[in-house]
Amino acid sequence: MQKTIYEDLGTKAYKEAWDYQETLFQEIIDAKLYNREHPDTPKEINNRLLFVEHPHVYTLGKSGAENNLLINDQFLKSIHATYYKSNRGGDITYHGPGQIVGYPIFDLEQLGLQVKSYIEKLEEAIILTIAEFGIKGERLDGATGVWLETSIPGKTRKICAIGVKASRYVTMHGFALNINTDLSYFNHINPCGFVDKGVTSVEKELGEKQDIERVKTILLEKISTLFQLDLNT
Image (cartoon, rainbow, N blue to C red):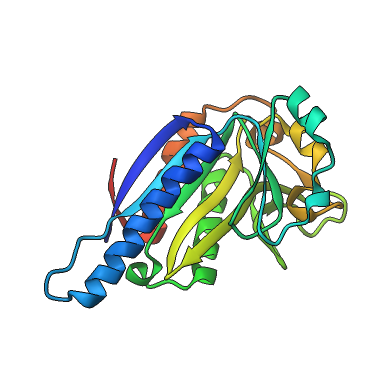
């Protein structure tokens, strides 16, 4: 079991959470480098897992196309949203109230994982979580994240986006699971670069608002079990 410190940051601005991630990310990398040079007196390395909700924000991954943001600065301000170019993988996405954003800052070496298997486990945690609500999540070939009805043309829609960064096998950034999200904000982007696929939420699928704290509890348990974490909350 890998020791992991969990924090629910509540509502926090995207850049503030990003800066905090960077600090924790660098602490783990520095500890790993120290331990390689000082094997007799190693520092303890704790994974970190952050849950947060962001005010309205669009973020563009390092491989994303800026023209997937379909609005200008003036319109951005009118809908009380901000925009950031991020150092994660993936294209453009939206974060906002009613969405669980998860930032696992994990040492994949200690967990015995490659980046691909790490992303697959994140997807599986989401699939198992939404299954508790009677929603069948699926993977889509050639795209990360969790989707619904992938075999039905015109019906395929994303419920969770995933975009990560990894350096020295330490991860940051993560996933965004739509619970009670205002989906109209996705109308102003090509979500994750796709123009032919929709976006959904747990609320939309079930027809009523959900208890986001209950979803967090279930999701935390699924992540903890799949990654075999010794969770300190």
